[in-house]
Amino acid sequence: MTENVSVMTDVASFSFEEALKELEIIVAKLENGQMKLQDAVDAYERGSALRKHCEKQLEAAESRLTVMTENDRKMEKNTKADPDTALEI
Image 1 (cartoon, rainbow, N blue to C red):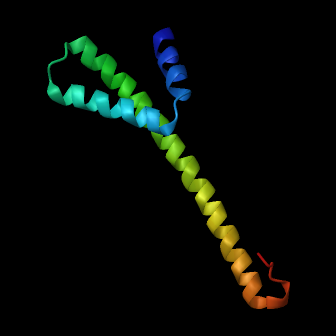
Image 2: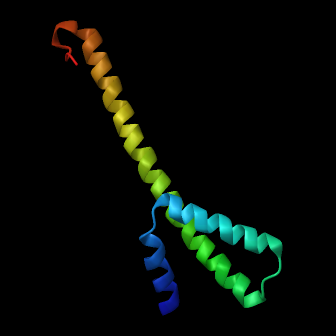
């Protein structure tokens, strides 16, 4: 159990790109089929943690983009309703 917590802590410090790169390497090794059983199970566990980390980061990015898009739409709607209050950029 301690090892699992360590794996998750290590993964949590990765950027999306770092996690994705390592995940791709793990997938390639697993697809090769030349790993010992325990090594394959360990790799799968790490890959699962990396996948979850990537998903969380993608969800966070999507949420930020959704908020920005909604704000842009509101601003655009307000500008169309009253062009005199539009911000000049």
